[in-house]
Image (cartoon, rainbow, N blue to C red; front, side, top):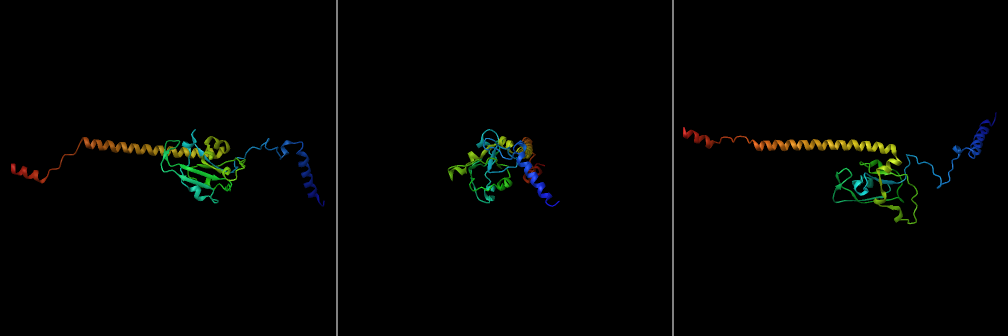
Length: 217
């Protein structure tokens, strides 16, 4: 029949249109902001800095390596590296960012900063309600606003965060094993040195001593 496909298409459109008034599963519109759709795990809006533990300043994973700043296409990341080191969340001495700013008015949410970070210190947030009446200062986020806990990271990206934590735990175990081996080697070297000092080898006989023995004979 001529036009059979068009009739079927119109019937499906009408079914969905009128069905949306009686079937909530077909209702594609929500009354935002009172109603909100659940966030998709793969959502990415703007970057944030991950920290471990309870203290965001002490627990920041960022070591101020400047890789994300250099690789950022719109150049919206600004980092100032510390001159000294301080212990991180696991007690390892690290450099830290004295200043870490992201201009979200310039950020294009490309996620390149996340991909190039070797420390899993920067991730993409799902927060999108960042409107501000301050065009410049309100959209320039400093590290205190960028810092968010690892628990928050697990909440918004559970699958990704679990994989990252597993990899970090493996790296930390390797580092601990390396430190144990280094400590054992240092202890063995110190013990060998102490034993050598306690039992010095006999002094070699010199030519003068040998001549004296010959004259005595």
